[in-house]
Image (cartoon, rainbow, N blue to C red; front, side, top):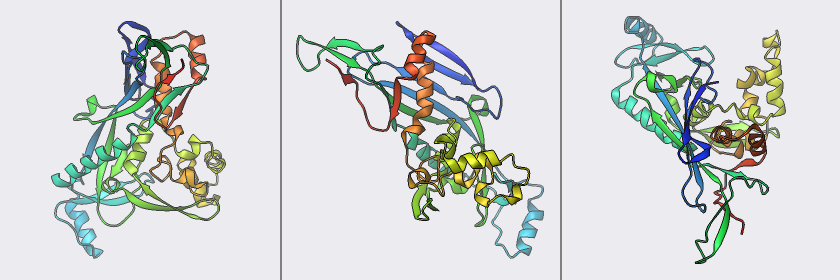
Amino acid sequence: MATLEKKAMMGRDMFFSKIRAFPENAWDRTECFDSELYIPPYGDESWKLTINLRIFYERVDPDKMLGPTLAAIARSKGWVVPAGNVGFYPDADDDAKWIRDWTQAEWDSFLRNVKNQAALWNHKFWLVPTNNYDTFDKVIADPKVSGQRAKYRPTVECLFNFEIALHYGYAHTTVKVVNVYGPNFFRSHNRLYSSGDAVIGPNESQDWRGNVVKTKYPVIAHEIGHSLGQPHIGKLRSLVLCGLAIDWERFPYQDALPWMFKGGSNADVCYGPHSAAGDIDNIMGAGDKFSKENGKPWLDRFFRHLNLSNTELFRAGGSWQVTTTKTPPMRLA
């Protein structure tokens, strides 16, 4: 888990306004992002919780010393070799795939598409307290009736601010990016992207009934979900088949497993295939839909912004939930 540095909110002892995260190591990305909580002066406006994530994208070009040799091998296979260097790079499955040099135009286009896919996470969730959680209720002048008072219970609008860092020292995480050459599939992960991830392509998977579920699959948005601490949808929702895949990851005879169960939480059944359609098309499955489970990074971080006693934090933890429906503050009286 990242080390968190908190800044008290001026004039409001119960809150921290800003939290900065410092990763303790390169592989644990838990809560490795910054956040800001804004409480407007009037009780009839939603609070705003913004997650700030900075990623440095490291452009990977083929080794210039090996380029001519590998180009000759490619030509011997009858491939049309592009100008510049070509090389090999292992994907998430450790399969070596052909890559080539980036042009500046290609790199600029890739970064634009990164921003567009990251924006899919913005303004998707609201945090809503239950009916009996009154700690933050506020009585204000009634905005509708002059001279009257009204009581409001706040809700929290969840925002996402994504930034492409110019240097790895300023980033929460670093991602290597390769420019794939040829039609071969390159499997990415949250620390390794490919040029093909910039395109939101179609995807088809079968649900447990054998029906084909057609989705759109924004790979970069999916990987950004991992950077926010989200596992695959099968683990997130504790789906039965994904649970089996995770348990069987320790099985000594991996070759005996059906292909869909190989890989633990990265197995195909953890992306949603062979489950319900609503799992397959989730952003942490193989689709572009968002559900309340995907708002967990904001829900978890919200409690970090509360400077309350352990008893009050426990009460708050059981009294707030995520919704994907825009929910303004609740007028009580």
